[in-house]
Length: 130
Image 1 (tube, one colour):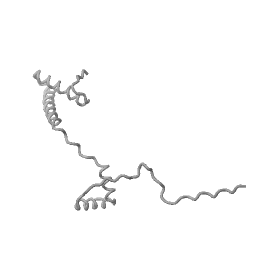
Image 2: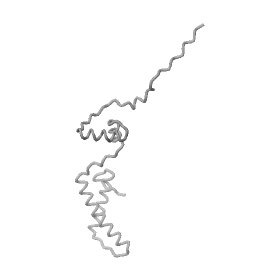
Image 3: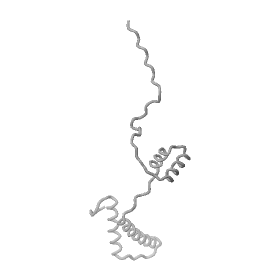
Image 4: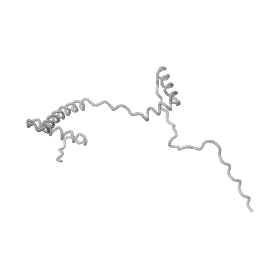
């Protein structure tokens, strides 16, 4: 008759975590003495270590939007002018006043609106027949 093998003894210690969650990569950031002091103070108020506080701050906060290209700002200003003109005309028409619009303005407004629609779709130079 065979003897029953002794039951395995449970390993002690902390259970292993998810290997994908293990932090193995280091990103070095140089800061001045004043900045380091400020980071340590802010981390301490949150009862965190500075590295933990930096990680949370960097990953949980929204960053400012990237700067808008100059060409986009110019186009935005032009579009705002056209929208203001259209808004004024629409308001007058809704109030029952007679509105006369130069054909050139309407054509330009239609052209700019179509161009904007195509740009929003990421299409350049094609015609949208909708």
